Length: 448
Ligand code: HEM
Image (cartoon, rainbow, N blue to C red; front, side):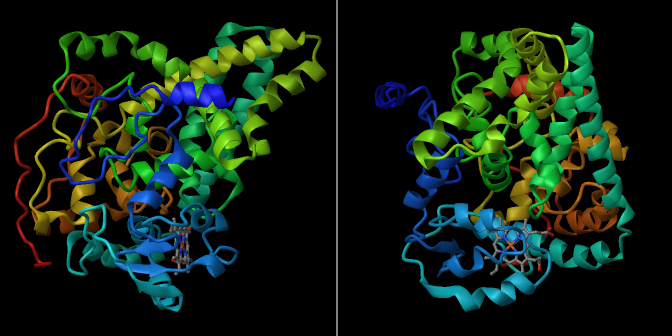
């Protein structure tokens, strides 16, 4: 095992990318096993939290909060030793967490933050957050229940179709079941962001891990979108290079050719990687790792199919699921030549409001945003979701009036295109060099 680890560690497969935002290049970013836990360890080395929790320029000891945190203990436990400024600001809408914070204060940090993002009270993000709080309180809970019912229906549909697919040996049923499983994974993502709840574990049925997603998706991708510190970009290298740099033309276009093959294998690759890092870094393998195999094992016990037949059919289901999930996920919101990617020309320091940065890194799709089912199954209403990840997707459409009004006031563009344009844009982004064009200037800079 030691040998394999060292052998894999010798591969440095990434070009030397430089963050135009000034974010430190994660030392082990190109390591083939670079994932959630290694990423968190790197953050503790780079962010001056001195073994505590850093929020802005203060260091806090949250040890006592671990067991009583209303959002769940895991969020606090796993972020020990890191800068949680963005996570803290994004995950809470009420003022209670801010009011509690001084109780945990230890001392001031000795270093500058590794991230240029600001959260000024009269900046775009905090202004919008203040304005949406009363809106949330007014919204009927039935829209949250609607999301929960959609999730449970997809769960039941997956269980039934997967069992029938294995029982009948039908490849078309396997494909159908795989697509339902992929949608179940996307739906579960809504719940992964919220306080601990059982629906977040629907994601584990896909071979992806809800714990790993809380790191790679909620804490990395949502906070540092399209930067060198976005695990959803770095984990797909060297297969896909969305970050811009001077690429050889063969490298540019070959990514288009093998894309479907890589999509199909993502679930397996990430499952194996998480298993190895669990053994290696955390020294424990959670039982949830094996949750997906409930289906083939149950089918083996209750039908006359052999174990290898059950596993083979399960392989078809997960292969088609991974292909579909890759296609939906990568074409959802973040990759298009018009979207900011680390390396491109950045905004001036005074425009580095976190919410402004989020809008620079996302584009919505009008054909997806029009239905609650499409939103929940295709990462819809994505700009609002990035700004307020704990708000249920069922409630996001109600925030548009106040969101659009605030964007207009700040001179900010909310981009919304079609699904087809984003698919084309995603493939073009893989071939793109650095963009020197400065982003459109903001209208008001209240926070200066
Ligand atoms: C890594 C940092 C943190 C993350 C990712 C996080 C995440 C969350 C999540 C997901 C929720 C549930 C939100 C919802 O369902 O609406 C929550 C609630 C809450 N968290 Fe945290 N949290 C973090 C740090 C903290 C800290 C440092 C405090 C206190 C000083 C705190 C206090 C609270 C409180 C009081 C709630 C209840 C809801 C509210 O009043 O807003 N959290 N948190």
